[in-house]
Length: 110
Image (cartoon, rainbow, N blue to C red; front, side, top):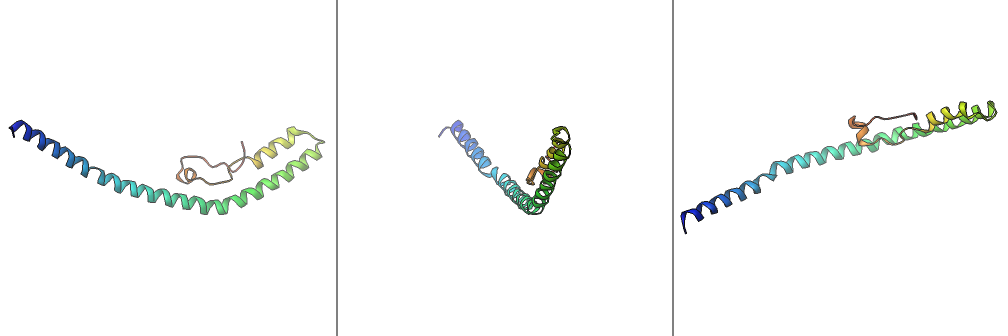
């Protein structure tokens, strides 16, 4: 074997070893990220179990008040509409992005 081939072979083996060993820290970060994502997902589900019923009761109450306002004003949707929109709009489910602060949680509609 000529010296240039042995250097090329040695460089190739060194590169292959470096590439084979490089993903190990990335896998550890990936597992940590997967654990974090799982914990945030479970937290989202648990918080939604408490939050959603409260939001549904609020929305139902808003529907009743909106209907009464509409009847009281003889069908004036300028009065009843904003009540309806505020009560029924908004988020009904807490997403992981809400818990992480990446997305705002809207209890009422806009």
